[in-house]
Image (cartoon, rainbow, N blue to C red; front, side, top):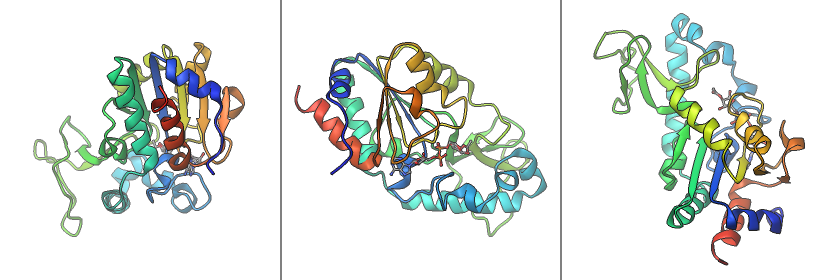
Length: 252
Ligand code: OAD
């Protein structure tokens, strides 16, 4: 049995005109994508200082590319799970009623889009895209063959890098601005599969709650913001979300 959610949450979602969901690595865990901070998570085995910042990339681009290429390969081989699919269904149901839905994600794996979600704000970029480390060139068309030399920009010749946000870098301006705007104006916010320790992403449920929204968290463990939300549903997103979305969409 998946963990229980309240009738209050179901009623709130049924009547909500604006819903915002923040997702983190946990929503993709059941697809086989490793999280960052769980036991055996990526930051347990690898060092962000060596792999996820610009200076590390300039110092040792081979090592950084090797790690991202491995992660790109993992992600290309996995599929969206029932949690991703349920969020796409919730969006479709709300959109049919002309209500708004925003999926703000910290994930770079593109699984929400593959599951059918449309209104997505990717706060930390997308690992399947690459961009130039110097100029504005971006592409999702280059399939990297790292046995050959490191990929370079067709426009300026400098190194290409994954189009993800590294430590110390700014989040994409449009996505961040829009995420904060919709969080502060929503009726219901779900925080799903995130430890909620990384800001500004964690401001999404925090701002939503401060602005009066009903905020529920779905996570097998309490997160850094559990004590601030209206409802904590202790469970896996791939199990809880399909039941929750069915309860909201099928009975009305
Ligand atoms: P974390 O690894 O910090 O947290 C993952 C969360 O998912 C934990 O709270 C787990 O309890 C929860 N979890 C695990 N399995 C789950 C499941 N089946 N269903 C639901 N929840 C589950 O990942 P994030 O919060 O996404 O940033 O981390 C935020 C950012 O920190 C990432 O985007 C990344 C990282 O450094 C960058 O790379 C910029």
